Length: 423
Ligand code: GDP
Ligand code: IMO
Ligand code: MG
Image (cartoon, rainbow, N blue to C red):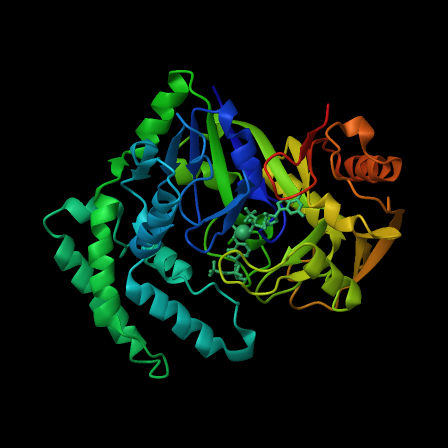
């Protein structure tokens, strides 16, 4: 069997968690391949809401194995809290949760370095979630990191102390960053016990053997393609490869093992944190989308910036990911509009184009919009694609023509059940 992938095509928060949870019963294994507790994946069912940060969104489906892959960075403190919350909600999953030995650990000092880096950037700050993501991936690529597999080794304490001391040296450059290391360090070491209680695996062997045995694997992305370290709106990005290529590195599989690539987009667009956002609406319409779509960060609670769907941006990320099917989420948020807009072209120095410029931060970018007719009615209770209002179907068909990939699912609300299968 091949590994199917679910990932976000915008700047994150496209509704990945909901779609992974919906599709999970079709799979044997759900595996997170990158990112860390910067992610916030929301699931709603049976009148309850859950937000996951490190644990894969397949956790609520019984019998399914959930893997935290080697490409993920783990903060044991956040992970412990997340596990505790799920246990309090009487979700049983610990025997179905596996963690890659090669996944890197976020130390308390990584979080302080994140804060220091952001403080030093001043008004140009990235708007990081301050979970220590950037500094942890820096130590990984700088060959200084500590991995899950290290916590059972004899030299673990020595490694930890060496890395912490290196961080403390750097932090001396940022006297304005205040921290209580003793307390956080104590919590961190205590929470390692919980991490030790999770079965650690050689992710690359585990996944490849599962594939050989005919098991179905779903790879769950975090963030969105526009936050990818290589292809996003650099430097306003996260520090991992959020695109399909990241699945290979993040789980240890070959490109030939990738099957369906399911790309998720909202019917509009949001971004949280700094950086360019060509279709942003800094007006009443943007505010309406924020309120109607409850666009407040699942991890930080920050208000999300809102704008129209951006078709050149989506064409770009569809290309990067090799998307084979699209999912449209939050279409219900547009129910009240007379007309719905979409960005169709960018206008920069070189004129009108559907390609993204090298660096959106540096060019004076304008956009061209097109309007589509709204449907002005609730989508409540609609279960079949054919029952959607004509204007909604026309809008979806138009997007499909422009994006050249079919939509296979339309999400009409946060709850698990509010999903329409198309075709
Ligand atoms: P993720 O990070 O991609 O998993 O997405 P988030 O959970 O951060 O943000 C998506 C938000 O939209 C969550 O609050 C979801 O409950 C909600 N949501 C998902 N799908 C829909 C939908 O179709 N309609 C509405 N109104 N909300 C949705
Ligand atoms: P999910 O998986 C939306 C954004 C931050 C910031 C930038 C860098 O829920 O879609 P980082 O903490 O990685 O150093 O932040 O990336 N960001 C997200 N935005 N959804 C996310 O995850 C995000 N994870 C990081 O707001 O702009
Ligand atoms: Mg999110």
